[in-house]
Amino acid sequence: MVDTWTDSEIDLAVADYFAMLAEELAGRAVNKAARYRALADLIPRSAKSVERKYQNISAVMIGFGQPWIAGLKPARHYQLALEDGVQRWLDAHPGWLNPNRSAGVAQVVADTPRLWLGPAPTHRNEPPPVDPKLMAAVAMKYDIAGRDERNRALGRAGEEVVLHHERTTLIEAGRHDLAAEVRWISDQDGDGLGYDIASFEPDGRERLAEVKTTNGWERTPFFISRNELAVSRERRDDWHLIRVYNFARRPSAFALRPPLESYVELTATSYSARFV
Image (cartoon, rainbow, N blue to C red; front, top):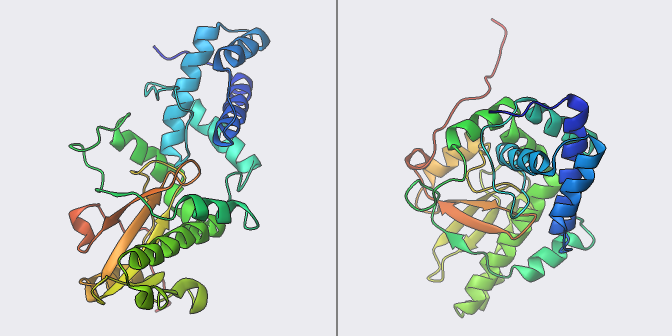
């Protein structure tokens, strides 16, 4: 049974949830039980009710492509008003997880010389904590793929991590010559060639990487342009989509090879309009 809270109660809970999450991402310990009791005294609600609501918020955070608090297992049967509450908080704090160019990105790159590249997510290799269809519906409703795509600071940070990974991989393979030739295409030549990084396999074959980055879980939807899709088909032997996820906590990634339809469902989201 869904425990119905007022908008003002939801706003207090969401704000406290994000405050705890910020502390956790910064590596500082959080006394969750004390936070539950403090909010319960303020509303008032029971501490158990507060904990359950925070688990509901964890589920909403997945749908919004955001990290969630470790130990607060996502609970799927939640009050729909929680989605609007999280949206209100994010609207009031745009770019709250944007990487800091002066220090943050450099530190992430230093801490992640090699990305962990795992398999693409499926029901067989990683049972999802909540229903993926429900989370996909939330993501579509609030245009989470578009939000990530427009977040240039996050996109550049992800590309920088992948760039470093590509060079490190080649150096470790003894190909210092190829590592020196790896180019950050979207930064040096512009974002329109259908890939972000021009790299190489250790045997010298071209390796073109299009990077998509999110702070959310591995199943967070992403946007792919018509041009990127066309290049993936034209250069299918060379082209890779590197999906970087969980960026705010510990960047991980997996690679998708053409045809992308083997892994994901592609949905047209815009049309070109002309006068006749």
